[in-house]
Image: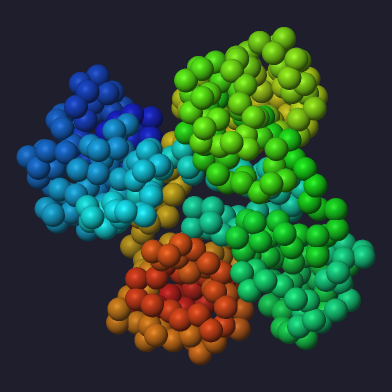
Length: 450
């Protein structure tokens, strides 16, 4: 495919590398001469030195017939303008990296629609999704997220004494926003019916919003959810803000540590239920005074990788049960992955890695994107957009002639993401997440995309 990348910061540089290695024709537009020289010397990428929001340089890069325009600079406004102009000049799909929360707030203006941008991506928010899912599900056997964290899939084992055990599913009163996808009994994986009776030891795949899954987890595994989880975030950064939003349930007791008094005041005003501590987490005395060692989670979210590593190790030494951290620099990412087990780190997340993984979902010649898998790839998750010519438009989920083992896990549109019920209607432009056997993917995708 023909792909234009605007901006060669950590995220843009990484995208140039992985996309060129995947065999795509990549052109980079970069105004910084040193960054441009580095890419040109080390990667198989065409480099244009200039302003990526300029029609002149976009046309020089070949925007009029490119498959993807990826605006990945550190400046939201430049990315939005580049994509808006690129779309007018003929780019098939435009992706803008944005940081500021205002651009994802559609209450007054839908920026994505207003500027004709196909996809908005916030690396910090994607990083927070990765970090928060471990906090909500520390003991789960498997966790996947769809629609950028709005819908989750969790695999749980039915415990002795669970309310769901020994009863037909029709007698288990669950919220309509939660769905049981698959049941595994021994080596057999199947889609349950209303008459299926769950037994202790069965593994069930649950699909729903994070809050709904949290609410109903005790139905399947009593004791799976703690009454209170104590979390310490190091750094009043955008990633921390996104983590707080992901963990808005009252059972999560959150403290934030930051040395900048103004940032602390802003955080305290924005989140009255969060305790904000003005100080440095590099101070052992502060950590001891605040009894950080009694916390369940310590999550280092600053933009300084050295501080994230050191404060995480210190917190672990003080007795914190789980430690997570953000890694910003590519040089540290590989090193940390190699020694994370030795350091006993629960999870690490990289903004550039999660952004590249998200974008790669959409870069495909197929009419769907594979976004995950279960059971060694026998069952896959796919995402697709329903086309106007599809015969599925206007049909309710119950009237779709889907293969028996095919599950619509989520419908995503302007209203948000939801787990559909049998009476929900499929509309043109809806993004669907489906879970199905790999051999059935092409057949099902063709039902929705013409």
